[in-house]
Length: 397
Image (cartoon, rainbow, N blue to C red; front, side, top):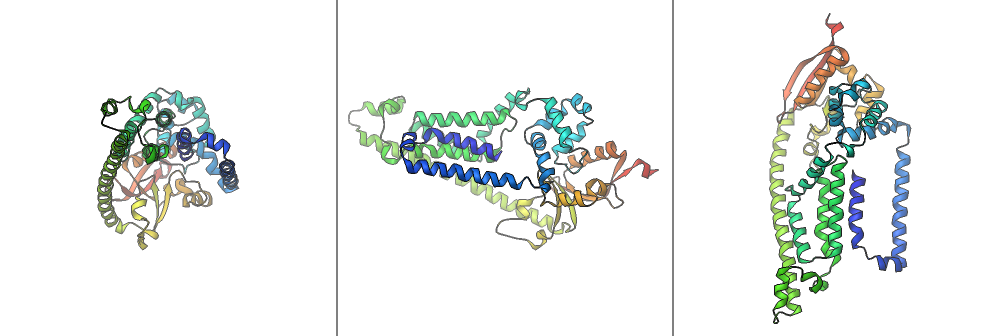
C-alpha cells in the first residue's frame, strides 16, 4: 500500500510540474535522471535482499496474505463456501487468517490460498466494489483530515485553476481506485493526499501571482461583484485574496491544532492507564495476536520501560515469517504454535475474545479436541491473556 500511496501522490504532482522548463533545463533533466537511477538502484538491492533463502516463506505467503487481510478477499472467500470446500478449507480457517494466524502451515499454505484467490477472481470485479468506493470517499470526512480538507476546498475556491482541478480529480480517482481494489478508508494513506491538496495552491501560485485573473475569478459571483465596482482596483483585489488565503490558513491551523492537542491529551491519559494495567504483564514467552498488544503505548519513542524491554512476544501479524521475528525462529526451529497448543502446559495467548472463539473451532476441526483455558487474566478493553491447551479426543480417552 505504501508504493500505491507514492504513485497516487506522484500522479497528483504531475499537473503542477513546469514541463516546458523541465524539457529545456539540462540541470533539471540531469537531476530527474539521477532520481530515477537512485530509485532503481535502491529497488534492485532491496529486491536482492528479499531473495535470500530465509525470506522464501515470507515472500511466498505475502501476496495471498495481503489479499486476505488487507484487501477484503478473506471476507469474500467466507461468503463462497464452495471455493473453500473445494480446497479443503473451512470458514473458520479463513477467519483465523483474517486474525493474522499464519503459524499453521496447513492453513497458511501459499499454493492453496493462491488457488482459492484465482477461483474467486479479481477483487475489483466483486459485488461489493462500489460499496468500497463509497467508503473510500466517505473517509475524507474523518476528523483527523477534515480540517485540512476544508482548507483545501477553501483555497481552491479562492485560487481556482485548471491544474489544481486536475490535482483534485487525480486524488479522488486514486482514492476511488483504492476502494475498488478492496482497500478503502485507510486514513494514514489519506493524510499525505489531503495535505498535498492543501499545499498545491501554494506550489501553483506564489504570493506575487495571487492578483486576480478575470477569466478565472469572474466565474465566481463574489469576485464578479468586487470587480464590478470601479473604485476597486487590482491592487485591492490582490489584498482581498491575500487576506482570504491568510484567513483560511489560520483557521485550518487553529482547528487542526485543537483536534491534535485534544487527541494528544486523550491518548496520553489512555496510555498512562494502559501502562499501569500492564505493570504485571508476564515477561515470559507470550503469543500476541494482531494489534491486540499496545506496542505504541508500551514502546514510546522518548520513554523506555525496562519491564517492557523484558517482554518475550511472539507476534502474530503480517511479519510472522520475517527472519527477524520470534515466530519465524519458533516455527522452523522448534515445535511451533500447534505443538505448544497441544502440549501439556499449553501456550499463553494474548488476544481478543473473537480470536479465542476461532481457536476453539480450530482445535475441534484440526485436532478433534477441546480447547481448555488453564488460566486467564483480563487487561481491559476486551484484551485477555489466557493459558490455552488443545486436548485431542484421543488424549481425553
